Image (cartoon, rainbow, N blue to C red; front, top):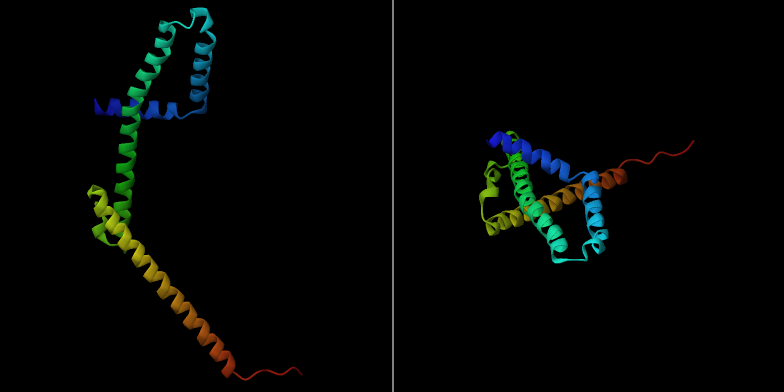
Amino acid sequence: MEKIFTKIANKVAHLAGLPLTFAACCLIVIVWGVSGPLFGFSDTWQLVINTGTTIITFLMVFLIQNTQNRDGAAIQAKLDELIRVSEGHNHFIGIEHLTESEVEEIRAKCEQAAKRHDRQHEEKIAAMAAKKVESRRRSPKKTAA
């Protein structure tokens, strides 16, 4: 059952994102609008579009959410594997299960660490440039013949 639902959800999510699908939906709305005078803009005429769009929206929310959940879980698994096999800190694995405030705290710490790293990197570059300038001052200048 789960595999069938996954296949259907993937197919519907894919089809829903196609330009042709958007064009078809626009065409349906135009046909509905143009048919208004034929039905005297009756309550039934309005109910048709309201009911149709409500049902489609209701079902699409669940299908697209399912697809997004699976995509997010797959991305997290891939990122976790990259962290695991790299020099990254393994304590980042699984942080998507923390509360929003806990994740924000970790994010702030990462930003601070990145800024410290940038400052250290800039200081190293400045020190290397200063050494280069100093070595040029000390080396004898060549004269043109």
